Length: 110
Image (cartoon, rainbow, N blue to C red; front, side, top):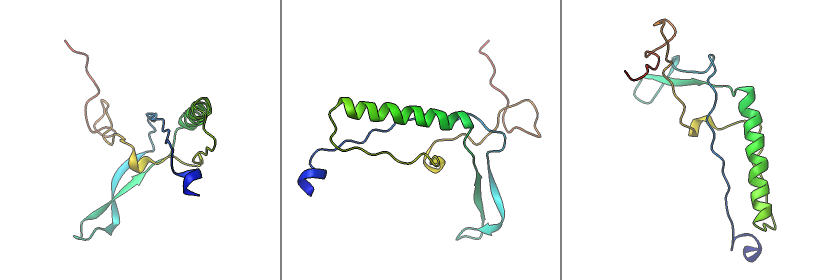
């Protein structure tokens, strides 16, 4: 078994940036606390529909790459969900309205 599965292996991962969603946020949970009694972080996240299409496209390209490399066995993670907890996502909204944004929108260089 080791000879067949673990002597030569490769992991192909495609990295993409998610599109912003106004419903995504990082906040403090009003009830749940951490080990120090501080409010725990609450992450509210949903993929943008176009992100899901991009993940499927990139997965297809990764499978093609493995085929071209001569892989004899290959498999892919299911695309049921992304893993935002390991992806660098911005949590500070940019905008002109302090009620809906945390920092000013990007300004062009003078």
